[in-house]
Length: 196
View (cartoon, one colour):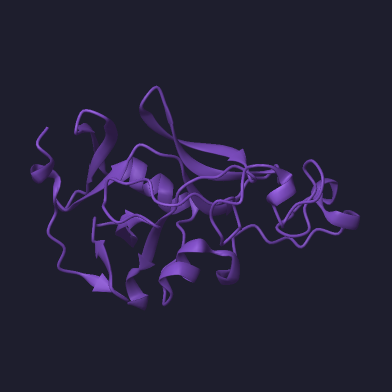
């Protein structure tokens, strides 16, 4: 596929970050956090961490201590430090990578918003420059974004508190998944329609 055919024209931006209206409940950023182009993976972050490149072990995870025990974002006594959960299941703005990097009303998508992207849009698999697997995601209104095939965090904690929800790929098929919070994944931001 010719790379020039993948370039999209963006007429909408908020805080200098372009977005696309896919006809969904939120607008979607055109690039991952830390990416210079829409086909790049961008930076990777542990869930709830706002600095990238810290590693993928509990040694580097400031919200955790030991294996499957956490100081914050816990809904179960079994995973909470001193058996005192905070019952916070969605990342707060200070721990939301998209909000911290892009400011304003930008934030990470919730599990519901990621499910909406998966269910209400057409996903077309692409191969860019013969090496980069990606998807053109087209909304029912005809607008589209490009998304590299890379795992993306949501802001939503799983009921098993050592996990958080993400978009992942199984044999190149996009699906909702849950992964260990210490793993490093990419971030694609969303913008609430009423907060531009």
